[in-house]
Length: 128
Image (cartoon, rainbow, N blue to C red):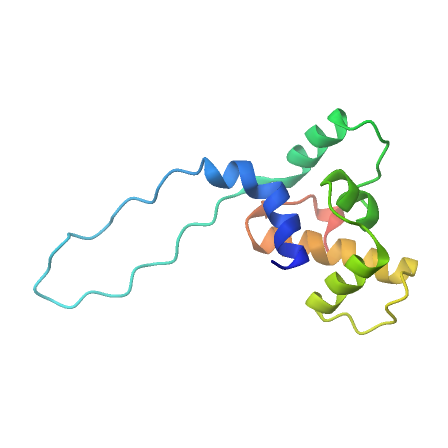
């Protein structure tokens, strides 16, 4: 599984499992050809709420709102340079993979943007 997939699962996991099953909108049998079924509705998850609740239960003071390292620590994921380099590769980062502030800020914003694209509600100041 991708590193972003693990981040997403750590945040969306509980909510995604409790989402209601989609309702059928067409009859089971029809003489006429039917259009392809529409895409599944995206489950919206309040990412800020989920992470804030986790932070209140943490024994560490983590700046998850702007730090990719702290965000990964809050989610109990490996935040090592190697893992962040792999995450940067997943997203196509073109800068130096040296763990610089530039790389880490870019990663945090990209993770938040991707969470939003996948149904996460993210405060505007955390997006690109």
